[in-house]
Length: 218
Image (cartoon, rainbow, N blue to C red):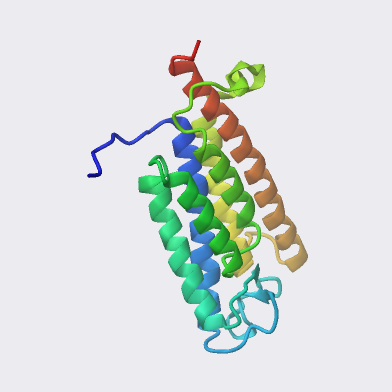
């Protein structure tokens, strides 16, 4: 019934999958700390995923939005959705249902306490997933994207390093040689900002690289 279809390992797919994995890890992270807060009411849509009893530093609150009025339930749902998003992003994003499932899981993750900033990752990943295997795009004619086509793997790798750095700081607040909490927070947000820029450039470069090798429609 479901015939075998070779996986699309294009640059567009790789970048989209990476964005999904990043968002899924965010869901696991937020969900885990929400789960630790136990069976108690969230008292509002905006919550601090890391409660006072599990906080490592003053800014380590990891705010999130959740429509589930219970920390335990929200944490379980966020972790389950985050894990499902990672599996989908790695294995099924190029399937006919991949883009729709990616968008639905991403929306659920956002509403279930999986983090606020990850919404940008989901939107970018979903948009890219719609372009997997597509032949035509004006992006391929942009000189900038052509220049980035050769460097998208490096851009993606650096963005992954920045993601890990930002995640570590967000949770633990540790920055070598930095003792002021406000300075550590600034470094965390700066890392996230640069990461998003590099991800956008990697997406542009990856798409251009794919268009250079895919026969264009007449």
